[in-house]
Length: 82
Length: 225
Image (cartoon, rainbow over all chains, first blue to last red; front, side):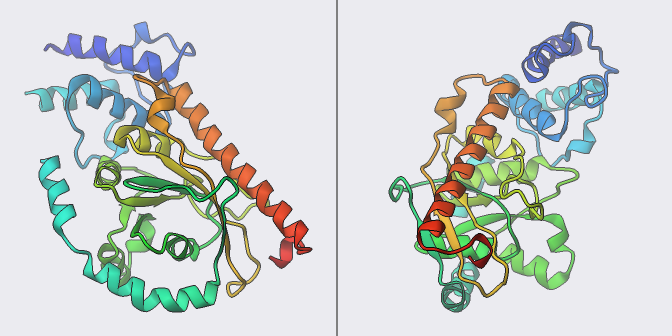
């Protein structure tokens, strides 16, 4: 699975998480989870749970502050998938 | 990895938990003289249950222990409580789940979910801390609903009335379990999760209303509870 594939799947998750408030289609790897996507701590938890279901992976002992940008999430998923 | 952990937690007998419960629990029962109300009847609680209660003070976890005396109740405890060595040892021995409110970790989340899947009772205060405001039940954070959704276990709303003095008689009002997984459906949106969170808060507000009615019937004023 390429980074682009992961990003596209992540966009689906973000769409459900943030609703119609933000145009997720324009989100790129540099987007901030809190500032650009407007996710709070519970929002990030929701995204993590959704990612776990979508990708069949489990997030380990990481804290939410470890994920600041979409890039950091993709890096983690890529590492887990490999 | 998970199933290995699950087996481990199932096999291990929490000796210290039971020791503290018996030695400390009896004085607590006498001190608190807990009276529990069940407005919709006593719920049949088997298996994993996530107890969602409002947080009035540090005596809430032992109060909940007295309400569900026949079962072990495991609490989520904030990281600050683990700062001193003795308390770190104590909370670990009591198998509490350490959480960091400022940087919530997936370790705490998975540990809670695994406890629930292991058919344990877990206590969470979804207000995120002690509520010092005049409002009995502050807005909830949605983490509890996500934990219940992920584990497939119900949430049990419990209302704890505030007391003026630590030695006052304690009360608890227990509602009916809410099946979060059924309410959520397959892929719940964040909006849906927030709606269910609000539903649980509304249930606790209803329990508060029931309690106030009972106190009025008994002729007790709110601050004399």
